[in-house]
Image (cartoon, rainbow, N blue to C red; front, side, top):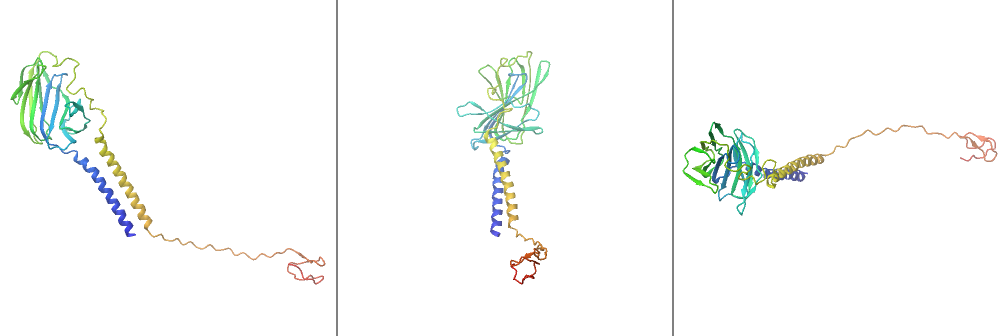
Length: 308
């Protein structure tokens, strides 16, 4: 009996260990991954009368892939318009991020088989006459060796003033000017900020009306199906919980079966004492036919022995 109990305890222990092994990766999913470089691109009035915010993250070469990347976005930011990782041939492929509410920052997590990840969302800017103003603070939460703000100057904008001051500029194939503000290494606790103002007398956007944003060719993240890597840990966790429940039920049942069963002593039924029944049927003498009482053994008429 001791052997059976010991086996049950070991079985329950194995089940608990399996559940811990499944839950461990879920807890580790929230850990930040150091990045080789992070660029925050801010494109005001690019394809909407808002500021397009683009996170471009390149993970360090030592990062084990696939990896789960954790990024912070402003809590008041609308849903992401796109999220992607760069494929082997250089194209951007759709990712399926999750977003959890926070204050003041929301947490975005996504699984990536690539070192390069990109997400997009929009934020409003201030308008006062012909003057536009905007400020952005990097939420932190990710360490990097090289952090850069990239500010695109809207088409038709004048007197653009950026703080901190850009150290270099570049022009793309569409003739749009980009101001670069490199800030060097940043820790998870650092919160660098950039702000800019400019004057613009027309409502024209930098690209033609109806043009799409950088990642708009990808499936929008809202309502996108979860990747298998997102679902599998939760399926395993649910299976572990079921196994725990089954183990506890099995343990309690077998423990109850091992208890000695005490016989229940039932009082013996008392047999009713019934008096012997006497056959009172009349007897007739086979010799003379005279009827005789059942208790007689000889005929009272002729003396012949009566047959029973």
